[in-house]
Image (cartoon, rainbow, N blue to C red; front, side, top):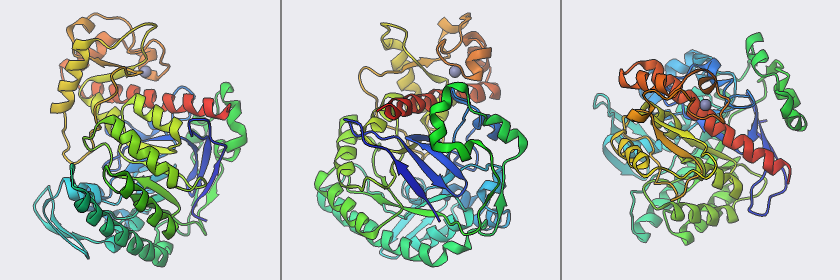
Length: 445
Ligand SMILES: [Zn+2]
């Protein structure tokens, strides 16, 4: 078995509470997945990732980037190490992207043919070739629970005809991805393994008393059982493209559903278009996708956006924003009663974002709504120099329980790596708490 998805009735706005059963464990949905680009969520140790968030459940699923791991340390090395889970000591579910987004946004001198794409590494200029089959081969060697079909990412903006041509290539590549995957999925490195969590991992997963509502969903998950992976395989999601054209989004979703994937991603969004266009494309695509399969929006977004999309019926999301913003001193917190975003703070923060892209090719989402439900704080501002409060008095993360804004500002100003780590832990906890809040509301529906 690759995947089982149990999903409740949709709320009025389309949101649904679910559980995704994967080879490495159960994931409560809607879920936000921190991005572990090079088999690490930058600056945050795995044991911390397992515990952050108000309920102590931690991140239940993380993402790793195929392109980066293929270049360094190489997928064959990771295969020899037993797959990416064992390599990075992470026993919970994982997802790998197809490598396509980075090939199209980061690599140099691309040459696209119907067969695949030839590119040069952004690291050393060496020449490489990715086809749907090769992307599958690399992702099987990495061994994440969920892998993604290889797709072409069209530039933005693109004409209707250019977008349609690109979409046609994506559909042909999706069919080839699925064909290769079905023929080779038994080659995953953990195909004959027993996995179990260590005692310390089990302790970290004892549910908080307030979490009793979860019992019906994941009693086995919380029990920390040893699980056999024998007979399990990875699963494969298709990626809906179609740019910013509703008719193409519809056509793409219909074509992919015909191919019968385990789940469906909505790709090619958050690439600079206005947020209302992102929302519209998601809404149009969700109408077509089958209710009984997980739906994943790639590379979004700001706190208010992930909350909104979860309420619309998106089950899975990932984004580098909480950790990348954290490394640049941008922190999210809940507004105090009646509080609005300070204009100068927002402008500072936006300035940081625009200059803060330290890894070209990673996604940087579109601008947020005018009245975000989260306040952005730029920790380097002088007003925090002697501020004794935690980042967010309403947050129960380990950083807010222990450290002041004054200390975090100091760490940032003197470029201490602990500052990036603590900021990342808080921002991730903030994102996970948003999802927990949405799940609770949807469970009560
Ligand atoms: Zn916090």
